Length: 602
Image (cartoon, rainbow, N blue to C red; front, side, top):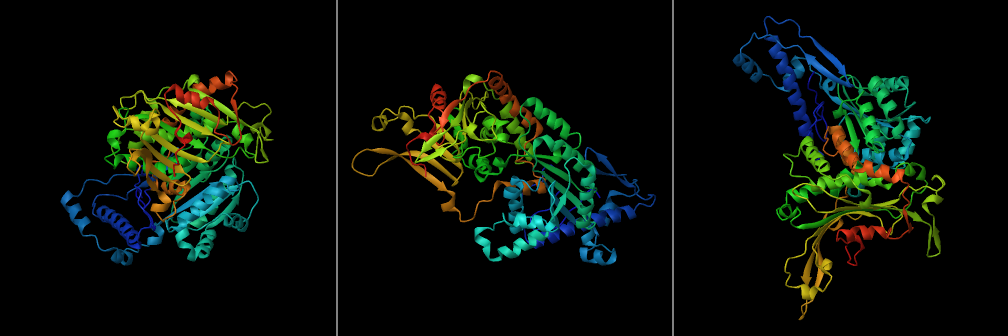
């Protein structure tokens, strides 16, 4: 049938909708019952209308396979009945209970099931993030009633081996520990394993057979998570699409970054994926878009009157997007060296945050409306120039009697590598709202601290009456909005305030929303939100192909220039604040990095 619904504690999943609305979960069981009632009414209403056609023969229904999707095609009925008669028949539909008895309607045969296959199940990402996120969704009653999880990899494992591996990474929510082990056991019973090659249609066909056994004749919806290296994406997608697609529900594929190395390789990857999948089947995941504070960006801006009027070049002097890690490549240098910090962090994570921050008000919260506005921002930006980029690479450093290795000391890194482990860049959006406002990005490994934040520095107060009390450093009197994405999530606004006392002494204080203090609930991991969205067909936090093209067009020219000219990175000590050149870059635009101030931000 064209419409299929299934009962779930969280939500009804639209079989082919590109704008499935997100609903908080869990739902009550009443809603699940209502969904079944709605389905049965639609199903039986159509039966009534078909029976009423005196000259109609049997209505042929067939499926049509196109680009990995299954679409139902129904021959229209003949016009033998008036609208009034049809309306009367539709309104006379009996209760679901009566239909179960009289029509032999079996609800189990018409419920849906979701099969989630983690391709690359033996890898670190699957073990550390994907399986724990799926369990967290199950623990919160956010997965559908009927679901199955399959691990797929080349490693030889049994179902029990997979369950032992997965069980070591599972944790429960802080506020619901009392039934933790019971929930874990129930979840692990839904986990199975299938060993196979990523480029074997036969192996995926065997997986398809196992999935069908678990699905038990229900409407089959299938989600494949590609937790594998990019060089085998296409073969895996081809085999999954041709041999293990759903025959009567939806099939979706989550693709992990990196999405290519430049515009050309990204376009080639997209073209290859679209040989086997439609665009609305491809979910390009950037886990930073699932972070709680990134999700809150649009809420902060569009639902608070005090911020929206200030969100422009008239009041904002600069915007800083800062990402730092206090560790190096730690044995992952072989992978990292092929991409570098710009491709790994800036072109995706930070640029996505920038687009969400700077976009115009969308028409609605529909996925396509939001993504349309993000694309407009990216297309309004100037391609990055070499003079607006500073790159660095960490070197060995001894501190407190401990010697920390240089990037090139990693045995997996090629000798003499010039790959940057740090980068700072100044970007500009040439539109009416942001003309002339520098957006400064900074990302690096082996720095002094770990964190990710957005800093909005506002302009100086014109003719400030208290300049004499502030002194010559006007930056210390600048209002600043800080959105700390991780760790220790918080939103705070720096304001000037009089220090209590008889004198007129000012200091800068924080109006602070500290999430841990304000909310007792544990913040979900980003993968939990994104996996739930993919299951529900919500694409708002996933990257569209034209969005990806626009992002790469900004960075590809400068990346090629860096590599062709073999630009030598500035070396900075492991555990330092990064290259000095980053400060000169900021100073060129009359900016001071906000994370280097002496203020206590907590």
